[in-house]
Structures are given as C-alpha cells and as structure tokens.
Length: 77
Image (tube, rainbow, N blue to C red; front, side):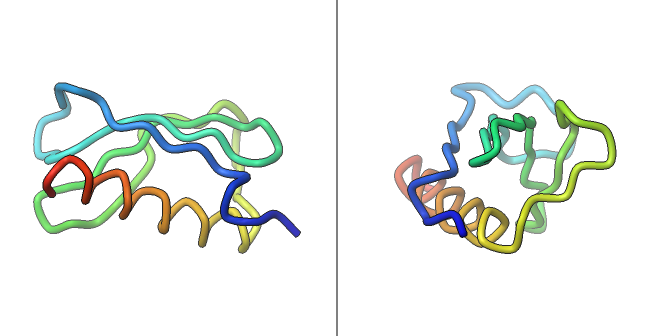
C-alpha cells in the first residue's frame, strides 16, 4: 500500500487549457504519469495518462488529492 509520499504532483506556471483554472502533472507510485486540470468548478480531471485505461490504486488516488490540494494551496488557489 502506497503512502502519501509515493505520488508526486506539480502545478504548471501557466494554464493553457480552456475552462481550466489550474493544470499540471502527476506521477503515481507505480510510475504511471498523467496530466491533470482543475476546472472552474474546482473539479479535477485528467487530460492525458501514460497507460491506457489506467486507474490509480485507492491509496494513490487519495494521495493525489492530498498532494493536489497542498500544491494548489501553495499557489494561492
């Protein structure tokens, strides 16, 4: 079971996705990478994932949400 430190999230300096307030990249504990966005309503989603039909483990999904929240808070969102 992966811990909170096993997922890495980064926030883009400039968000170029229409309708998105923030975007960035994530690397899950198993090495799968993805690009995420947060829309105007605060809903996170993925625009790209390195493995087709990938679903992160529940621990990775929770860690992603925690890391995303912390990263966005640092940026003033």
